[in-house]
Amino acid sequence: MAHTSALAAARHGLLARQGWDVEAKGLQGSPAIRILANAHHHSSVTRSLRLLGLGSDCIEPLGGKTPVKVDADVLQAALAQAPYAQTIVILNAGHLNIGACDDFEVLCPVAQASGAWVHVDGAFGLWANASPRLAPLVKGIALADSWATDGHKWLNTQYDCGMATTRDPQAHSAAMRMIAAYLTSGGPVRDPMDFTPEWSRRARSLPTLAALMELGRDGLAAMVERCCDHAVAIYDGIAALDGATGIAHPTMNQGLIRLDANNGNNISDAVIAAINASGEAF
Ligand SMILES: *Cc1c(COP(=O)(O)O)cnc(C)c1O
Image 1: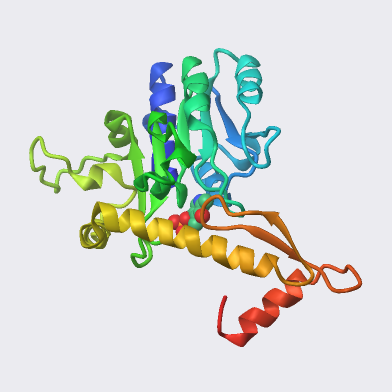
Image 2: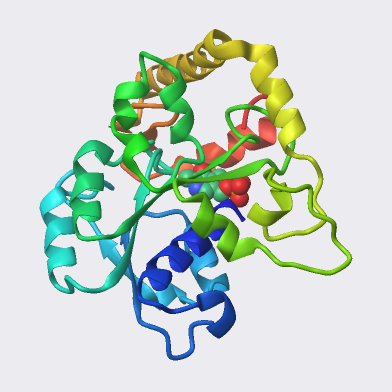
């Protein structure tokens, strides 16, 4: 829903520029929207595009020379194919398997120079910015136009504390706001209902705020760093075992290791099943 809210804001913002009221007219007959996304986007991005009427087939995947990262020249070439298109560029802060983050400092200005809206999947990666040690991983992330992240991951709040932040509150509320005679308005104050898909919604912000206040700025940074340190320790410990081959050393909170039997057969799935069956670790 965080992706859906942010991408609905993007959809509004881009189409409003073309004089198209997408909330009233929908997407039938609208100017086209291009979606350029890191080829290794999370499937929740795909689902949001489905819900928003853009469809999963609209995604044009971007790659590059570094695994799961988008190269600036690849993005530039894709944008140049349709310089007048309304484009949303979707980047990763924390890839699902190896934690890789796109180079926001370089990619955001390239996208925005052609009028594109940059959305970041920061489910995990946005929190790296809280740590002075890890923040360089997501350098330039503040340049994007919208971000989705989760409280229920690194912040350890209960499900479901998804969060959407956009640079353009007008586009965000225009995408969500409904007016009904029976609803009273508090005047010129921000009504959360104008920024979410639901009218009736639990106050998920409260546990999120409580967790942030309990940890404090330093506590949050320490928790994120500690988790990353543990990931490295677990990775190094497993990678030193017989039959283990390191594939991707953790840059953030996850890494990839392959496990082979003496005969060279990949036994990763069997080892995972045995670990999970032990109940000691997952
Ligand atoms: C978990 C995750 C999501 C989806 O988050 P939910 O709020 O749990 O649905 C999206 N992107 C990435 C990279 C994730 O790790």
